[in-house]
Amino acid sequence: MFFKTNDNVRLYYADSGQGIPLIFLSGFGGNSIEWAKQKNFFNAAGYRTITMDYRNHGQSARTNRGLRIARLSMDLANLIERLKLSQVVMIGSSMGAGVIWSYLSLFGTQNVRGVVSIDQSPYGLDDDNWRFGALHITEARLAADVNRIANLKYTVGAVDTDLHEKLRQAQEEQPFDFLQNKPLLLDNLRQDWRDVLRYAQIPQLFLAGANSPIWSSDHTAFCKALVQDGYGESYIFERVGHLAHLEASQEFNEVVGHWLQNS
Image 1 (tube, one colour):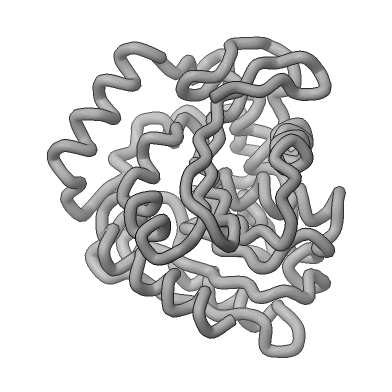
Image 2 (cartoon, rainbow, N blue to C red):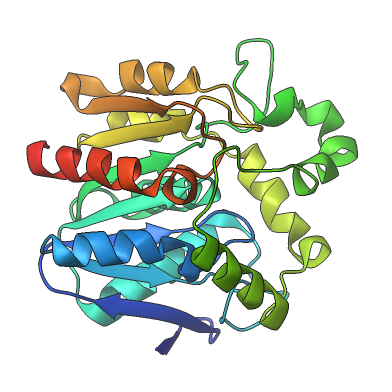
């Protein structure tokens, strides 16, 4: 299915099941297909599942407009309005968590039941007081070092063979252009969402892979402590890289499912 954003860009989304709505958001360069194991599991568990391909990702339209996190969070708001959703749970992998935090910053938490972030530091760069940036890149080195992110091997654990093939085919049919979308990655890394985590009084679950090639998983403990009034929880997947929902899908589903039932 497709919808038009309020700046007239055609985006793909998928919507299935009934119950509490769960919105799954991929990272930079990702697409809706990577959430297949989660859609099957949570639909069977009585949840409604929704995925969206960002502009320039997956089956969505290609454009040079709006390549910034704030625009993607507005696209998310457009989809929520179109589907007339309320009390949603937002689950974001990598940059997808940044899109969620941007949404909370712009639109507040009144329509959000909870948030799950997957392997995403709330501030993407290192500085004198922060050591959880991507590859320990600083602002001074960002322009020179950002291309290193494109060349990483994101996974440590094995991805399901059939799903891996579907992802390969999707990338072949709808290729992702790193250079075109580099401004989006730069914008994502420069954002600092620590204040959003601190003041968002909703349940928040911070997940990370112990062997992530991008961040230290220690950022999850910081995030949990940052969240007020006991709303924060964290979990680290052993022998997992950057994409826990793909590398350890069963464990991921069980962890998130338990959190949903108890938050």
